[in-house]
Length: 377
Image (cartoon, rainbow, N blue to C red):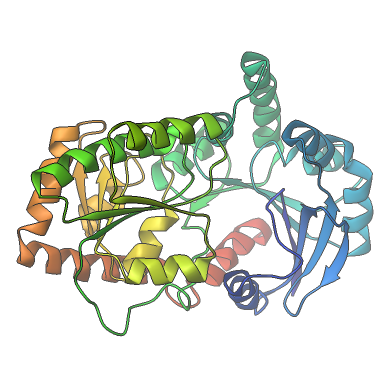
């Protein structure tokens, strides 16, 4: 089996979640799995299905990125030589810089895959407030072009976007969803109808949470406040979170609850106890939350954007509305709750689509397709 390293600043705790354990367990059937991440407590930890090298994590996001992605080159070189790494999967073109430089200088000899989860730079900049944004964008674009030109393969979550990148840089590519734990996210034992609507994701402008809150407030007024809106997610943008809370307080809204960040197991339980998932994103690659909700038989209503329209809107499980069109969203909500046949159809279709995208063994099989492309003569 080949030695595969996942390289990026994904936060893996010193104790892995059940979802992470299941992902590494499936991949370990075809690879020796290693991870290069960061943590407040640096060191190397051997888990049952993977070994994780933790680099020191700093409180400052900028310092953390600079240290991990630029200064960290010697730690990375020592690790990949020690573990005889054959394939490096970088989570974005910025994190691919160190592997690309080392390979370009003929210091190492491994294949480099760059993961593409949408416009990673917009995702980062919209989640937090940064100084010198224009400078960051310019430098990031230079690094990205260099990394993409010198990688071996591009792996994305959205077919059209991945194809476009592959054609632009003349690279082999493959699109498939990010890992979804179909043992944690699964069909509920009993589907009970209620009036709970749900949002799951980072509370940031790109996700349109304030728009959802305003739209739900209007819909709730029209329906004598019999519905409840649950908001689950992290709050990296404190100013935006304050805007959401100020609107709720100013308008004296009592049927919206912020539940904070939850574990995958907790999110799954909440999905199984909800009736409808809401999304208002302005951009997505291929939202994993829609796959997870579908496995829990939780249909959705979403803004009509790339990554959602296909396959979720066209194949099934998701009703679409024009982005930022509040009246259209309210109309879709009314259609859903007043048409039992439509709801039952969406429940069935969302489960079928999610099962097809994330069935048992599909994640490993997709990685095997990448390996075949890398090593075929």
